[in-house]
Length: 274
Ligand SMILES: C[S@@+](CC[C@H](N)C(=O)[O-])C[C@H]1O[C@@H](n2cnc3c(N)ncnc32)[C@H](O)[C@@H]1O
Image (cartoon, rainbow, N blue to C red):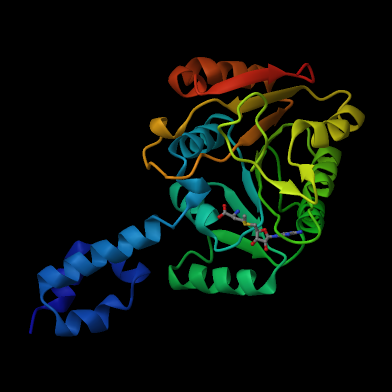
């Protein structure tokens, strides 16, 4: 019988706490097998199936932005399996991480997943439609600026994007909004979504910006790269998205200087002049 307590604890208390199932496993397996299993469990935990589409440039951009702009809240609209939010909460410890999901099934499933991997205190899950969740989080003070929004709620009859944007524009002065599955102008290589014949595009969202943000600086970053530049290659074409910076122009210019190589992957459009 291997000395489980010594070997498992040598590996580190964190992994044992995160994977308590390793203890009964360790009773029946060698120290070497236990270490291999712990490694597998840890890599499963840290590598959700498709965090931010496994787009390494997007991931790098998000982590750098969270840090550089001293973002205090990450808010995801549309949790699904929790892949993206779990990946992010694992990488960034010092911000509030919130995700909302309207479907009870996905909400409960992700809640169980969070509890299983001991991350339920890191991610605040909300079982509500995204515009209502955004509104209530602002009103309760849970959601504070600067915030980074990952707007990815769709698939149902009701597509909440414009209502999410209305809430955000009503409450936000300096935040970053990243809309997923977005049509990137002049880049047919990047996939985007269409709902009921309406493209997820600038044409669709720009009236909201015209009417709501008279005094707020707007900067748009569009991805300008292809699969060959990504760490994990996919047989699918990369998804389009847009990052909209509200009231952060000066900081964004400094960001682009500091992260020059990363910024080369984006086209920066100022205001509404597109
Ligand atoms: C593409 S998936 C989200 C993927 C997830 N953001 C990620 O990166 O792993 C879209 C999710 O949005 C959810 N959804 C649809 N309408 C919603 C709404 N009004 N409010 C919140 N979530 C919604 C769907 O149930 C689905 O789970």
